[in-house]
Length: 193
Image 1 (tube, rainbow, N blue to C red):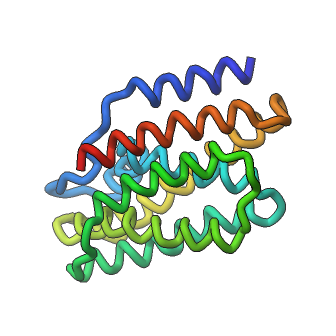
Image 2 (spheres, rainbow, N blue to C red; image 1 turned 60 degrees about the vertical axis):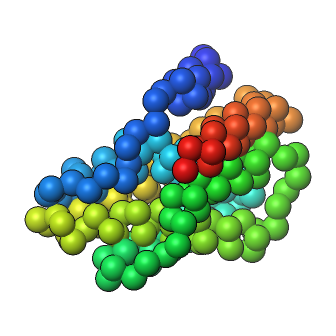
């Protein structure tokens, strides 16, 4: 039953149209911030990968890897809020989907420090995309809280999917296949930038 849900989840992600996650909204608060990562196709895929990847590492990485993402995403958001430019933000986000998908697809345990370094770097791009929107918002503090909660919720879903997939498929065939599909989507996003 759980494998059918996971398969349906990833098929839905694969056939969904990419959301316009980086358009500037006229106003908003918590819900706008929460919706940004949840409805942004590229953000959602990257954060799901971070959650699943953390379960591949196991132990404390299950919470430290997503926490590093959230912390550096917040730093990227502050950089965007201060209107400090980061070159190629959309390119960086697309590359994050591609490389995080590949990290799931390869059948090798990556060192935790390397995963955390990549996650931190990618999170800055994702955070910057959030941050450049904040000055136009009526309630920026609530928006920040919303995008942190939205991001964290997606990480939790990724962790739960990762745990469920490892329990049902100890050889990680489904995790690798899912990572391959996500990497292909990342490649498509990269070509679209």
